[in-house]
Image (cartoon, rainbow, N blue to C red; front, side, top):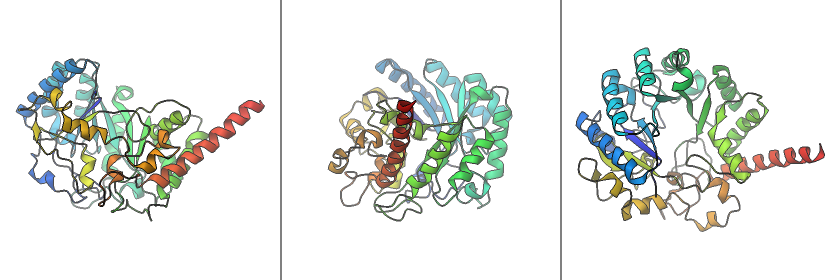
Length: 375
């Protein structure tokens, strides 16, 4: 068991009100009891704990500042946090920020450049696509503010080092050609397309049923454009799945059977499960609540309760284990397997979508190999 990603929920609030947000808008209101910001004392505990975790496992991990919206901390508090993290961790442990982009300023970018912190920006596509679901707390469109922040990031003198890419949540009712062309126009370095959260009882947005493939058809058009593009951005989902079909390994959770260790530390210092589980009735909390000021993180991640949760990342459904595409699909995200009747012991709600996408990838690879053989 090793931890490769630590999500720090440094802000318990957000300046946007995205309709699909699993933290605020999927029925779990535990955020109301969380501090608005991770306190300075809690940050000190976190940094010390992460330093000891690195020593215990002797392998680096990625630290991702998350929320809510982490840039709500402001430059002064961000600088203090960066200082204590960099003091406690070796340079091999990367630090990044997942931001909605609205609060990106030159001061924030200069600060990130000074401490080697990268940024990924959430942007779903052109204004009509993005603003359909990503609005501010007064219901106003956010696209203009996000793209203004993104423009500052792309113009910064250290943009090549700072900008890791775009996180885009899929709207299967949008035009995938238009979305791809938009990101192509923006010249973003990478795109991480994410399916909407949902489960087998509460279907994801615009998904007609367990046997339909709205998301798979949508992302297959992205695949078509991607493979035809002579200078494409990196698309992690497609890259990983193609590598897995060819016998390689994925680099992030969600596809394949590679073992990933993720721990989440909330703004009050509690050690929790992956917070996408807020979208299921079973929730994101451990029964015995651990906190960074009281419990040793390196021991927590080796505890029976944490290891049992970690083991659930691998699919348990007999249907999945009998599927010839399990090594590529990986059973999908844990939250997407939930059913009120039997918990997580099911195929993903996106099973049909992934089968559709994998079949299309295999057709491309078969045609390519046949062309190579004939040449």
